[in-house]
Image (cartoon, rainbow, N blue to C red; front, side):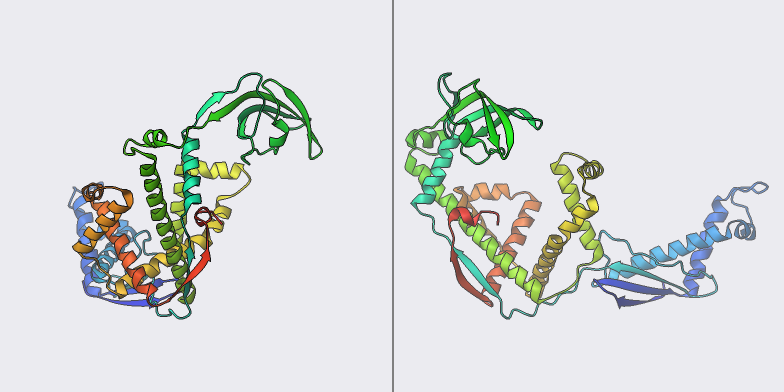
Length: 431
């Protein structure tokens, strides 16, 4: 097909493509379409396949031209995008024709479409970037905290005797009734844990099963009845507890060593995540560019569908639920827009840098990664390899290794300093 094409860059990585197809190809396509009509048309008074072309043109002229025009557009776009490497439409957006072009079989045919393309980003500005690396030490306190958590997870919960009163750390079930207000039966909470929404921990301490008590709280008169009291029987932190946690542990020291290793792995991963996030946030700020509208829309739609899956419902039903709660889907998407744009820009910058620096990984580097994962997880290299036998999992590992290699390069080109001392717990706290 003889054609000319012209790309014009628009805002937000959009492109306008103007295509002109030569008159000869227009006529040939029209005649081919007319031949198909002649072959298949059934009109009273004529045998199938013997309807004169001029009769068909008089009866179906507009439809003939529309079909021929559609055929020309499809063929020309396919031909252009098969060869085009830079100005290709994003996979989730079809080119849009703003206005219907004129079609004349005696003239060249020109049409215009617009579409979004992947943003062209050249990351140049690394000046002034400083990354603060949190300083985290894992000591005896952190180890004891984790042992205590394991001890509580392995506790046996049992009913207290009928004459025993509620004490701190007991699990109580109450009936709660406000005067002329909320009533709630069977409410369960752990005394002193901070998860009591009514703030009556201190008030129920000393109460016994089936005992009722009137309480005044924030000018509200409340009646509380204790329905059940349970206590945790904590196991001793010893070799037996270690063996209960996993058969791979023979002694408490085995368990402690495993906890320490896992905490070190978690710490290093979290610090690496914090460093990469800080780096990307600063690169996004120093190298501004716009996200294509269709890319942002696809990301927001994906988040909406993921939220629907989490609620075990459909996207349509989720919208009804949100509306019933007094919110709107549009308002929620608007709230997500800022974070979604930052995340997309970070992805695009990483992709641009990987390509610009031609980052790749060798089979030897992947073998080293297998060993690293095995050491961190207390597994054998063979077990790790088996986990990544699936091609998609292997591809993810390769991509992740490339990114880590990129970050290590970039950290040499920016300033990395020691940050504040942070406890292990605060490192993972949501702030």
